[in-house]
Each structure stands twice: as C-alpha cells, then as structure tokens.
Amino acid sequence: MPSILIVVIVLVLFIGMITGSYNRLVGLRQGVKRSWADIDAELRRRHDLIPNLVETVKGYASHESETLENVIRARNAAIAAPGNGAVGSAATAEALKNENMLSGALRQIFALSESYPQLKADANFRQLQEELSRIESHIAISRQGYNGQVQIYNTTVETFPTSLIAGSFGFLKEEFFEVDDPAVRDVPVVRF
Image (cartoon, rainbow, N blue to C red; front, side, top):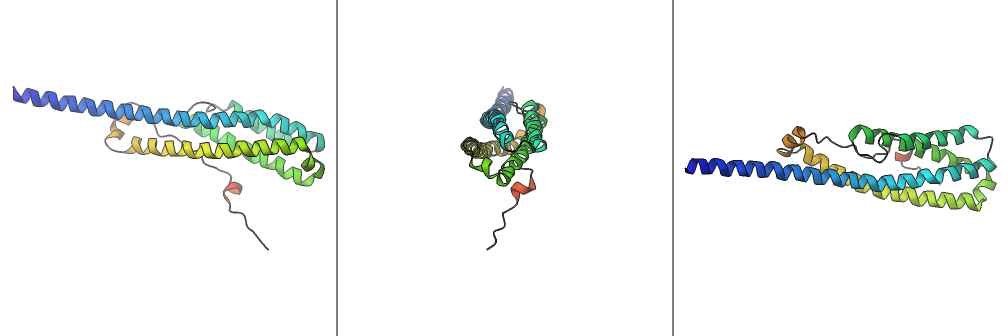
C-alpha cells in the first residue's frame, strides 16, 4: 500500500510540474503576442501616415518619383507581410524585414527634404515629420518591451526541464525585433 501511495504522489507531482510548465509557457507566449500587438498598433499608425507624407513630398519633388515609389512599395510590402498582426518565428521575421526596409525608405524621403528648402519649410511636411518621429519613438519603446518578453520566453523555452515540455507541445523560439540597417546601427561621427 505505501508503495502505491508513493507512485501516486510522484505521478501527481510529475503531472503538476508538466501542467505548471505548460501554463507558464502559454502565459509567456501570450506576453510576446501582447507586446507584438503594441508594436503592430504603432506600425499601423506609421503605415497610415505614409501616403500623406508621400503626397506632400510629391508636391515639391515630383521628379523624385523613384524614391517615392520605393516608399510606397516598402509600405505595401510591410502591410501585406504575413507576420503583420501575428506572432510566429517565420511570420515575425518576415514582418520585421519589411518594416526595416520601410524605415530605410522613409530615411530617403527625409534626406530629400534637405535638397528642397520649400519642402523642409512646409508646415504640413513638418507636422507629418513630427508625428512620424513620435510614432518611431513609440515603436522603439514597444520594441524594447517586445524584445524583453521574447528574451524571457526564449530563455524559458530553452531551459531544462521546461525545454522538454516546450519541444513536446510545439513552443518555438521567437525572433527579436532588431534593426538590420547598418546605417541605423552606426554611431554618428561628430567632427568639429
């Protein structure tokens, strides 16, 4: 009788450990999804702002059509990305790649403004630029939160014994939201 009781206790503890680990993984995955939703909301705001920005620039720099087309193409790719609004390693990686391309295209538009003083002085352009700057700041803050959630989740997925449960139930590592553009990563050089 005591040996059956010991087996039952061990079995209950084992099931409790599996259930606890599974529930922790589900909670962490939901945290990653919530963090991605925060980023996604800011990205949608950025996507919605871009057509107005392009129209404003077009009024002053219409012969820069290639740059404007690149921005629209990058925006459309970012909106159509399979990871838009969803979390999952492949989907998120594709969405992040497209968002990084869009960021590069937007930098080209702002570089154009340096060549067109009238554009740079336009109140609508300045307002759109300020709004985009605020959105970019919110994206950066949301990205930090997302990457923190991904780090905790990935560590849990890879840590023993949770890694056994994660592998058995299909919990996969998530991608970090990193800036791929070397121009953004480079430290600016200041010369006097």
